[in-house]
Length: 124
Image (cartoon, rainbow, N blue to C red):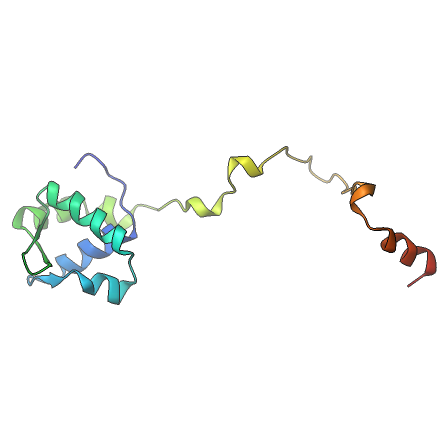
C-alpha cells in the first residue's frame, strides 16, 4: 500500500477486523464507533483495492489472510504513528500578521463605542 497515512476510520476497521476471524457487518462501524459513512466507504475501497479486506454480498467485511499478514507487518504505522490534528492549527487565511512578543494591545479608536468613553469619564 503506497499511502501510509491512516485515519481513525482506517485504524478502527483494521483493529476490529483483526481481532476476529468472523465477518463483521459494515453498520457496526457506524453504530459502535460513530464513524461517518463516507469515511467507512473510503476505507473499504482503499483496503479492498489492495486485497487487505473482502466486502461480502451481505455488506459485511472480513480481513483476508494476506490482509492479516499485512496488518501485522504494518502495525507500527497503523497503530503507533502520531496523527496530526489539522484542526489544531488556524488556517493560513486567518494569520494576517504576527504580533511581536510582549507588545501592548492598542485598539483602533473607531472600533470602540462612544458609550465606553462616556462611562470612563463618568467613573462607572
